[in-house]
Every structure is written in structure tokens, then in C-alpha cells.
Length: 308
Image 1 (cartoon, rainbow, N blue to C red):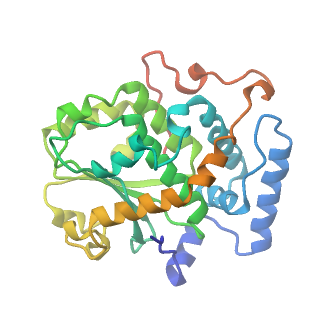
Image 2: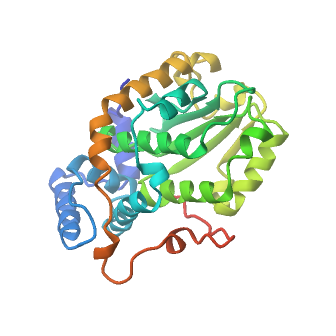
């Protein structure tokens, strides 16, 4: 399963949107500046390869200061949330079985404006909700692969949530604490630009879900959430052809794309194992170590996240 990379006019427009320097020498200079900064951080690993650093730069619109903050959080989260970042082996039964009950693929193509599209849907209304932290673990594993395989910048992410089999029983396992940890991981530790969220096959439960996550979101993100009572209205945002067959498209069956991601995650098993050692050492952090309270403020309140 290959991620189609932008080219031609699309690539040129994306580079302009991301404020990417025209000169590769300028990009290499930025990469070197980040490496020099990492070398001065006693608590952070030094193993970040050039490709991932370039992905961070693009996701931060080439703001070196933003990249520094993201990288610190990227390594810090690996200590703070072991339920997301330990034992990342899809051959383990608890992870392998998830691919039979939930589909979370990133689609291979790009929208006309250069955005990457990811999907999330359950398979069967009657299936008992699996371990939510493990689902989030898989999503972040795919995110790590994208750091490596997005050879060129993309103009942000689009998420499609199919609510057709969602039930109150499924939703009950999504606690405020786990949702908060996940959203902070995604938005503060990864170079993600969330551009659109589309919810299809809406039901009254969807309102409950949105109200649940609303405390996390700033107003501009609420404006990016779109509800679709029919699939036709989704096509105004995501071309029909690039969607899976079940949604009228030509990308193949959702299960097949999902299985291809399983195979890719399995291929990366040795890399994921090696990466488990790559995390912040709080004992060496200048100043005070970062605690769970510092990161998540688990005091019953929700701080809003800035999502570019």
C-alpha cells in the first residue's frame, strides 16, 4: 500500500502553502539547526532521521521554534502515555484482532487541494467495543509511518467518520481522560494539520459525541466539522473516485485497504520495537521533569487545543 505523493502543480501549490523554501540547501540548513538544538537537549534522543525532521518542518510551516516544541512533546509522550507507545506489535492478538472490528485506513490518494484522507468506522453494531487505547495506539502507529513515508508535504488531513454502527455502548468506553490524552498526543506531538472532519451516516448519537469532545476544540475547528445525511454531499469535499468502493469510489474495498495497512504495520515491527527506547529522559530534563498533571491537567478540566 503506497501513499500517492503530490507532483506537478499540486506539489508547487502545497509548497507555497507550507512556506517551503525553494532551495534544498535552505531546508538542509533548517534540518541542521534542529539537529544542533537536539544535541543541546540532554533529555531528548538524537535518533530523528532527516526525512522525519523534514515532515515536522512542513507540518510546522518551517517554523523551527514550533518544530522544537513538537519534537519535545513527541519524545515526552512516549514516557507519559505508555498505553499508546509500548508493545507496538500488530502480531500480538490484542492488536491483530482490532483489524477485524474497526477500519482505520489512510487512503492512498490525495484530494485536488493536496489533502490526505483517513477513515474510521466500525464493522458491526453487535461487536463489543475493544480496548480504546489500543485503537488509538494503532492510529498513532500509522501516524509514525506517515512521518517516514510522506516524502513531500501534504496540505493537511481530512478525517471521515462513518457513524452507521456506532452505539451508546461503544461510546461509553471513550473516557474523558483517554480522549484528552489522545488529542494532546495528536495535536501537540505530531505535525498534523486538521483541515476537515466529515461525519457520515449521522444519528442522534453523533450530537452526544460532538458535545463530548467540544471542550477540546477551538471555535475554528468546530467550523470544520461537517455532517452528511447522504453520501452525495461528501463528494463536494472528497472526490468520489478516491473513496473506497462502499462509498461509491474506486479505491478498493475498505477492508482491503485496512488489511494493507496491517501488512505495512507488520513490516515495520522491528522499527517500532527499536523506537520504544526513543523517549525523553525526564531525569535529565533541564529544570523540572514534566508530570502527567503538567501534560494533561487531569483535574477534571479540559484545556482547549490549538489545531492549525
